[in-house]
Length: 153
Image (cartoon, rainbow, N blue to C red; front, side, top):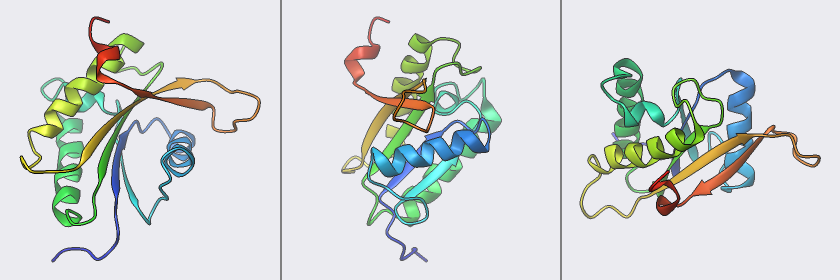
């Protein structure tokens, strides 16, 4: 039975603790216009989107993330508009910013294999820097990544 809740996005992000998840929820609300429990499903996993880029290395975590994604894709196929993949600076699984960004591209390709050919779901790639600007309480600054930025890094 399909859910009646209006879910428009799924976010795969790192699970580096409650404070980190709160920052991702602020990002979803303020930068993406999504609110938790109303229009976004959060799939927190240690290593964020990198686990979907290295499914054999991080087998357990990648299975967890994929299972959540596939379930949500099926349950909310009528309202789902985008999948948001997030990696962050200082991640223990993606040892550098360049690797974290490359992992976003690989994770996108992993997910695309599971989408129907006629799917209109977009996949957005975001990289978070650990910063604390004066007017931002979250401590993370999220930057949207374009595919071309990752090529050659």
